[in-house]
Length: 135
Image 1: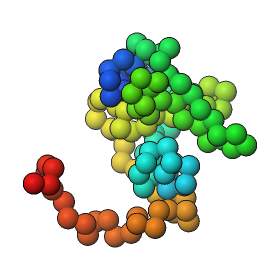
Image 2: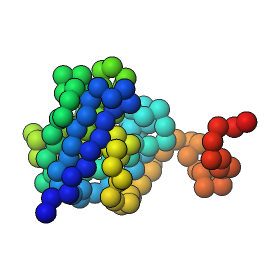
Image 3: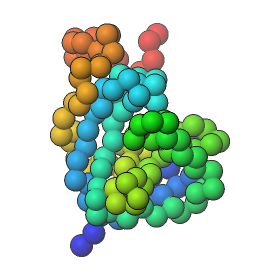
Image 4: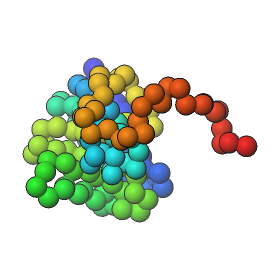
């Protein structure tokens, strides 16, 4: 039986489902993913078998491929949220983990591209943790 995952963008105009399981979950620290996310890494799930189905707002999804690279990103044109995409001619579904509304079924397989990680991305487990906003 196929596993169904659902997700959406921040503004709610784009909704989707992914039918199938994920093959890999990588935290990518390349400079492109840093620019894409404004953070230390991208967090993407990959599947060569799952099917991406747009439930609403597919016309709001914009795709960008960095010229001269295989690096691409799909996002909601209204709110900028990262969205899933089909890559490699539809052979690969790439889903930003944070775009899922259902629990992420996988744990990350690896941190990749550590050679280009942000200079402040060290020993983050030692940074203070708070359950809410600083007071």
